Length: 193
Image (cartoon, rainbow, N blue to C red; front, side, top):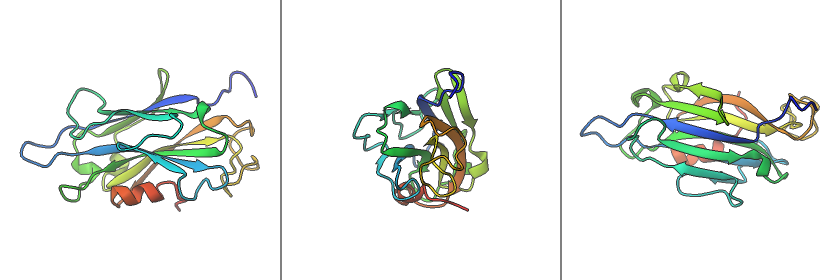
């Protein structure tokens, strides 16, 4: 592997939205990260990280958690330190879920939503979530170890995108879901047609 072709190391995932109109229930959006084992990269998550939890090894942390969208710029931010993740983990999926306490709410009903995935000063993804406007939750990005076979989910690099080096690769994964936040955490990393 060339020194010019390094994998992704440490990323920040950020989320923004505008507050709900005066007199309406607060819009509460949450970043969620699901970590998957190498032997089950599309199975149930080994663990989830969200507003009420943290990764057991400290590799994924939520720096900011907003319940209203009030503030300037990005309202929530999560750091994912991929290079520190144990080798037994091969895939991380990051998404956004809208809390449904005030009734069904979709991304299209929340003003000025946006996500950004950034490594250092380089934006890997910036999106307004327009393509998932009718969804109540959405995946936004996945990170996979190079060598994870995309066709079978096994490690080995037979059809992986890189050279099997074990470096982390970034893939945009904008897919909408019409489900509640707790169900989203359980299914966000499953294979979808």
